[in-house]
Length: 130
Image (cartoon, one colour):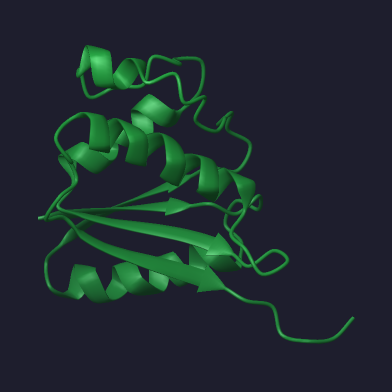
């Protein structure tokens, strides 16, 4: 069994990554393999709604100049998916949103390819203060 986690923070190895690693530690105690993918510094655009994934049905996004297809393949191969993001102005980061939109559209176009996979979200929230 394998779980892949995506750190949607703009900070590689920051608090969100630490929270995902905390979740991974519990999974690893149960013998579950884990892999962390950092989105920080990686090109990742939002979905263009071209719907070519519905025509092609090849489990890929036609836009192939960023890491989306790599992430889709990792999700497809995993039994579980964790998406982590800090909370920026009461929302997830643009990187995390782009990941969800692109992977979600391809999944939907290909018979809901992530259906029945375990999933979880991890949110890092900053405490108050200046």
